Length: 137
Image (cartoon, rainbow, N blue to C red):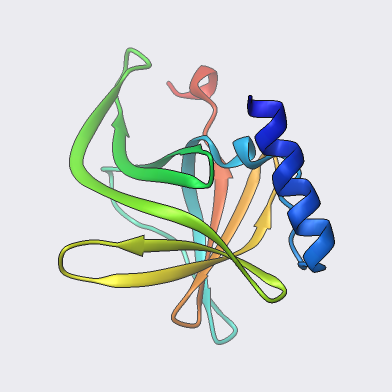
C-alpha cells in the first residue's frame, strides 16, 4: 500500500512538473530540529536551553505535526501543540496546508531530503536538520 502511494505521488509530481519531487513522502516522517531561520538575507539561530523538535507523521497525503522535547533517556515529552495538515500540489510547488479552529496557513516545501528540510512561510525560510536519536546526549 505504501509503495502504491509513493508511486502515485511520484507520478503526480513528475506529471505536473513540480519543482520539488516527493519521490518518497515518508522522508518527512520523523523528528526535525530547526537549525536556523532566514529572512531577507539575514540568518537567525534559535537560542535557549529548552529545544523543541517538530515531529512529522504523514500517511496518504495527510499528516500531523507535533512539538516534542527530547529527554535524557532517548524518549520524548510530547507537548499539547499539534497541527493537522494536507500535502497540496499547486502549479510548480508543494505545500503543507494547515487548518486549525483559529487559523489556516500554508508552508511551502522548498527542499526535502533524508537529512534536510526547508519550509517557507511568510517570507521566512525554516531550515531543519533531521534529528538523530542516537546522537542525543
